[in-house]
Length: 596
Image 1 (cartoon, one colour):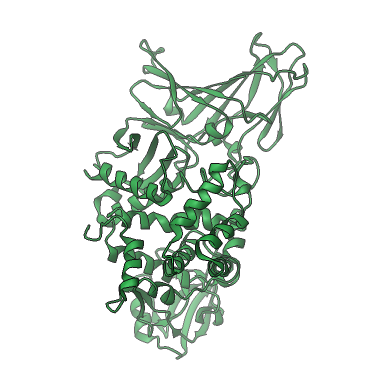
Image 2 (cartoon, rainbow, N blue to C red):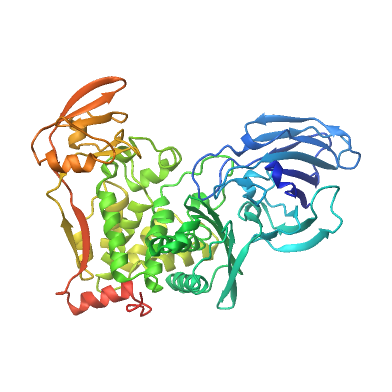
């Protein structure tokens, strides 16, 4: 019952993939009953309906034995119905996939490389997710292929075809639909680095470096990240091998997790600065941590994916928020971030959270449920109406971790994650919120359960100073006297992109789309805005703002407020021995305190 795919990427100049699928009809299927096929509409890990079918060319079908054409009718946006004859036993389907979108979730084929996710590539028989698949990939012979699926055969056409370059075929095997859609493919002239952890092979494969060389320490740095991530779960690595697929471009940043691999989209220049390289390692740590958290330990709603419709859950604050908490923490524990650099990142995140009024409007749980219509479709009001379950979820995880570490047992969030993993994934099931609460009750008692409810079920406004004090860290707000207006400008100008709810700009009726022309009769532009504002704005003193609004010059009066200040986290020199021990157990469990 094998599904036999041929994916032709041998002519990358066409910017498309030519796909042929041949398979036998399911046993017992009535002759002439027809066969339905579907294409996924989204990719797990990226919670937005992407409508991949918009890139499909005409879908045609025939009887595989006789070659006789079979009618193929589109029945919905992503489904096709093949009308089989009574005598049809095998069918062959052909279509093309336009591939010119370089993201971690789509397909991109150029003269230099080919990359795709199978979610946007493979038509699959409806109702038959357990079928195994063989994928024969045709590509230029000088290209290498990287994919987490096992290779079952290789072949090369040494003669070539006409004027076309020499081609090769690499055959992969997938056990079922989930496995096929969870293993992107990358082809090109690739740069590969390899290392082992506990005898398990790991690799990172670079495409598009264009002469840029990653740091010589990269392999060892990633090995330390893997070791640090594994220590959180206190068990063996959950995969037989792992590969990072790294797409390098002029700009861009992002990642997408898979069970045995991940895709990283990074700027080539990221490796040229300490800051850029630290951010790259944080991205790699984030996607790697997902190999446990969501690819294996995942909510009940995600235990069986519905690839055609939204899969709602209120637990993205755990899936993504806790992962975002651990990514930088893993780098710190691996000795790849100094303590002061890690605390500076936390302080920056606290500042960002404080600037999002939506945390008082929509809880982390509700924001998780609404990810499909809010986070992935932001507008100028998103910050006022919702909250980011990645960043804010990570800070909620921080508060919960510090509460647990300050308790009598001194056990942190690591223990919660370990027990939840063993009681859900290791028992072959997804977890529920009740499961999370039950583990928290065991580890931290009723206070921990109540604290989690406060953090994720209602307005999010934690006392970070009190939480950090438990591990001997002081939160200091600096520059609180600076007057605040409460607007964000679009890049490169003084056109307002967003207005913070409740801010002086909000009360002055400034609106997204307004172009600020002058403040107190002083002309402003992108280069002089900050200088003029600092000169004329004072706390609780009205200022006149001249704006162009939909072609009309308008005057508004705003009364600047005292700013929130900038958070700064400092080691408390008066911390007790117990607080210092808790701090070391949190930040330095592997003894990297002196590392750079």
